[in-house]
Length: 63
Image (cartoon, rainbow, N blue to C red; front, side):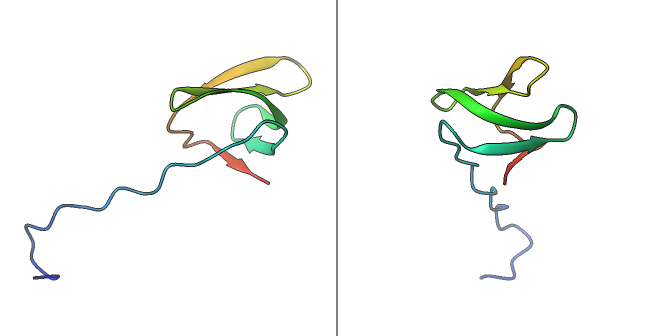
């Protein structure tokens, strides 16, 4: 039943990024994706330095 209390929770969809995407991060601010490690991490240039952001990217979103 859809209202069953034993129903497994649905996981949120994974965020997808591509090289060249402009992003914002809660800690580092605005940046641009420069590399992708599929399913593991993305490399982002934030101007003041490059950071490797690990999946699942909770603190980062695409602009």
